[in-house]
Length: 141
Image (cartoon, rainbow, N blue to C red; front, top):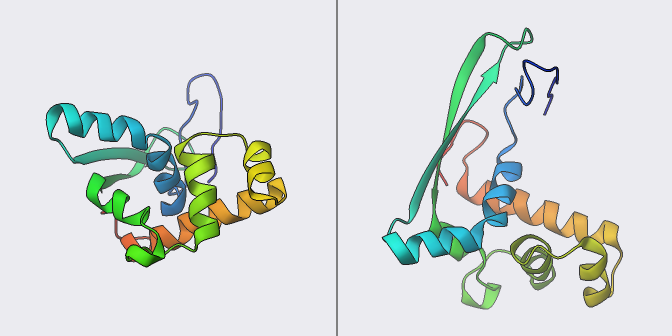
């Protein structure tokens, strides 16, 4: 992702955000999403963002993402219950992303390096995104 920052255009992106990165951010707020569902019954969220031309003024396209809590839950199932992630990837995701623990703490618990924690999480998000997004053009999770 290329982000050019200046005072008037801070945070504007000139390339699409990879689906696995979006998915990771959604999972970071998984607890809030569950609370929203519990209080309102709403299980689908929609989010959009603009992709700008290199001048950071002209909008090239708007990307819309639709996310279902039920699909997110399925992604957190162990393989024994139909999930797709290995137990190590799932453990890293649950601790680092869902519970928001620091990589060094997760590494201590799992008996691995912090680099390995990052690799497990990254590969898990790619694997989950590949399941829910059909290539870069599909934007429904």
